[in-house]
Structure formats: C-alpha cells, structure tokens
Amino acid sequence: MGFSPTSMKAIINRSNFSSLLKSGEFRKDKVIQKHNQFINCSGLQPGDKIKKQMGFSPTSMKAIIDCNNFYCSCERLFLPHLDKKPVVVLSNNDGCIISRSDEAKKLGVPMAGPYFQAKPLIQKHQIATFSSNYNLYGDLSWRVMETLRTILGKEKVEVYSVDECFLDFSGFGGQDLYQAGIEIRETVERWTGIKVSVGIAPTKVLCKVANHLAKKNKEETRCVVVLNNEAEIATALQKTPVGDIWGVGRQYAEKLRQAWGIYDGYQLQQMSEEFGRSQLGGVVGARLVRELKGVSCNDMEEELTQKKMIATTRMFGTPVTNLGDIKEAVATYTSRAAEKLRRQHGAARVISVFVVMKEESHSVSFNRGATRSLYATLPTATSFTHELIKPAIALVDELYEKGRIYKKAGVMLSGIVPDESIQGNLFQPETSNCGRRLMEAIDNINFSQRDDILKFASSGLTRDWKMRQELRSPRYTTRWEELYRVG
Image (cartoon, rainbow, N blue to C red; front, side):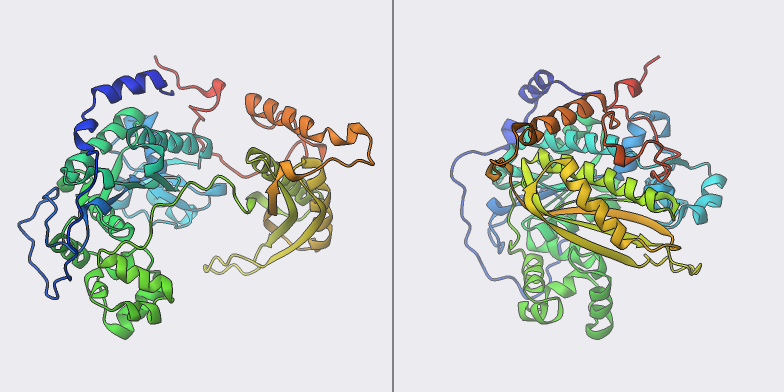
C-alpha cells in the first residue's frame, strides 16, 4: 500500500507549492502595541492578507496539522464502505472507546467511556467497532509526516504526536495562507488517504485554537482556519471555551471560571502575564498568556532521536495472579524495550519494573489501582536483552505478593548512554564480548519475519496474559500475509 519516492517527486513537480513558497529575505513589520478594545471582524474571511497594524510579523506564522479522528480514519481507509458511517476504536484489551467518527459522536457515543457501557448503543445503531491496530496506525502516521517533510522540508516539521505535527510557515511571507493550507490538506489526503485539519496562526497555542475551529465546522471552513490578524484572533478566542485552550487543564479551567469569571479564551487573553504566572503554574502560565496575545514563546523543536528514557507497558488480557505469568510478561516487555534501545544505538544503566494491582472495589470510579515499583542499577550499561531480563525478573520476585490480582506491568530503561562508549571486558573470553552481533542478528530476523519469531524462553510460549484485540483489523501495510486484497 506504500507510495514510491519516484511517484512522489512527480507529484511535487506538478503541484503549485512553488508558487506559495517565497524565498529571500523576509519583511519585518513594525511591532505596534495591541489594541485594548475588541475589533469587530465579522466581515473578515480566512486567507485575508496580513495587515501592517498587527502586533506580530507574518514571517513568524506557524501551522498545526491534525488528522481527523485518526484511528477511525485509518480503519476507513481500507474499508471505504464505512465512509460517512459511525465508527469507534477501542483501547487496549478492548476496554474503553478512544476514537470516534463524527457520525458516532452525533449518536451520543461517549469518549473514553467503557465499552461494555456503550455496547447497547453501539449494537442499536450498528456502529462499526475495532480493536486498536497500532501497527497500522503507526505506519500511516509515518506516511502522513513523511508527506509533510517532502512538501516543506524536514527542518520545518515538528512531530508532536501520532496524529498531529507543527509546521514552520515562515517561508510563506505575504502569500495566501488559507490557500496554502488547502493545498497541504488536499495533498496529504491524496497521497495517504488520511483527512486532516489545518490551523494557521502566529503561535502554537493559537494554532491549536484555529485547528479546533476548523474541526468544529468542517464544511464551512474546508478544514482550514487562518488567524493572521488581531480581529480574527479575538473572534476565534471568543468562540473557544477556556477549558479548550491548549495548556489549560480541567482544574485550571474550573479555577478560572469560579474564581475569576473567565469563561473563554478572549477573556484569558486580556489578562496580564503576571496573572498567568501566579494563577496558571508560573513561567508556563506566563508563556500561555503571551502566546494568546500573538507573541511566540514555543519555538519549533528538533526531532528527538535520542530518548532519555524508554518504556514498554501493557495491560494484561485477563487479570493475572500467577508469578510465572508476570515474569513472562516482564521478560517480553524487557525484550521490546531493549529493541528500542538498540535502535537508537544506546545502552542503559538503570532498569525499573512496576506492577499495577487490581482494585477489589467494584464501584464505578474505575480507579487505576495500587502501583508498586523497584529499580536496579546495573554494574555496566548494556543493551543486551539477556543482561536486562535477568535483573528484571529478580525485581518481579521482590514485587510479587501472593494472593493479589494484577492487571498491568511495565519496564523502563534509563541512564541511557551511547553504546559506542561501552568497552568489552578484557578479562572475559572473546565469546562473551560478541553479544552485539547476536542482538543484531535477532533484531534483523524479528524485523523481517515479525511476531517475535526469535525470543528468549523466559518470555513464554503460550502467553495467556497477552493483551486482548478481539476486533482488530488486518495490519494491511506491515504484514505480507495481511495485505489488502482487491477483487
């Protein structure tokens, strides 16, 4: 289902992005103090040219690309008969609803609600339901991000999450930003099949506001909203509840409403930076207020290629009481974390293991359960799976309490250093120092054959504790045996 680099180049040459990008030195508008009173902008349309009286320079514009109902869109891509029909995707172990199509939202399916509670409604309206298919979602996410990197350049794309990223729009200058957003949206959909919304504004916080409005009124906005002057920003913030502002959590939103009478983004924009510092968490709150005023405080960040901590955690498919099952799960998670560690050519000095116990109460509060964790510092940093499994299993022996029920476990690797800095042991035979080649061979075989065809015996064979995915769709783009069949 992939697209070839040659076909992508052909499309680029035919596209009109070259007419949108403006090269050379950028104009620096004078920064004029923000108007104190609200300006009525009911006549303004997205894409109006940037005006000189703005308190920010047009060369500082940014954008956010957010995939529409991403998990549902991935499922619909290979099942086109589900287009315009209600679709939901479930979390690990088919526990909660984590993605809903617009049609499912209109039918009243709750977000993050337990699946068993929504099941009568789902069955009544024949809503298509899927288990999480992370192999498919991860691959399609990569294709969306790679498309944007091809269009704008790698240095202008900051991946924020699996379904959204920020773009540096400084190169567009005084060009029609709305049309640029339309071109990007259409290109991503044409190349990948995934529909996206685009929010364009001078700061990241305002980009999120614009994107929220674009998603809220898809037909009217064509999934693109541009905030490129003070009047448009003021109107957009008045339409945005304070709880929907990026960086304002549930508790802060309640505090702003109850204690200060602030109900929308525009009211928060009128507050001082000192107010943000004292009421919204210090420097972070001050930056939030500045960003609402159009002053960029969160610059584009480079892609994080070297992680400082690597974790692998999973819910058990069924509650576990047996020590052996927990050891198998932790050994499996350790193997997966070690693969990620070797992928970035690192080695870890510290390994941590945690387990989550199931609450005995059957109340509807759905408490997370008690968590116990321990860590071990290794004598030498390592990325070898067998050297990491051994201390992990020892930690499980210390954490386990007989008679308790466990629902989740996880492994975290920290104290990460480059593996090039690790020396072989001069006092061990040569065969003890060739673990790196063994790990490379295992990784290459598992990558090509998939499904952990080579694994350590401590990871188990039956894996009865494995996560449930009873409604998972085929992994169309990452498994040869599950390729989409036409005809």
